Image (cartoon, rainbow, N blue to C red; front, side, top):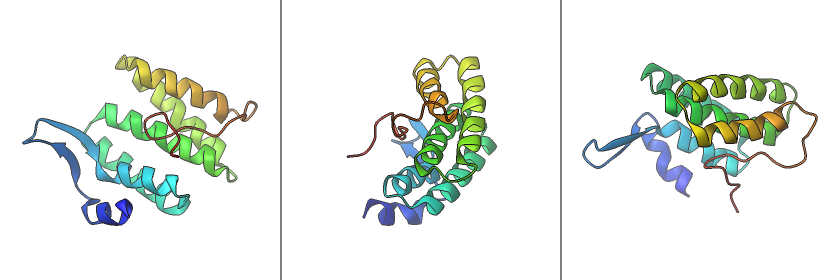
Length: 134
């Protein structure tokens, strides 16, 4: 229900208050909701849109968060090529998170890196804010 309500606002940014702060592209929120309901194709498409929007805005922190959530979705989906793409996203996110000293994102990305290498796929990846939906 939330996905359907948010969909008409996909091309907008999440802004709180009268420009007090921004949370990036609505596409990212839609992607996370789609991934939570295993709508993999929608999630992938939305993550790509979110990356493009956040990169155009030069919103590097939003790009890192989107890369992490996207990588986690790919690891959960576990289709051919997903692990490799997830690994690329994690490595890109790690580089930027180090530059920006994003400690929590660094830890989350390192956790994903363990899953992305394929050798230690012990648990489902975590997306959104580091928690799996219930």
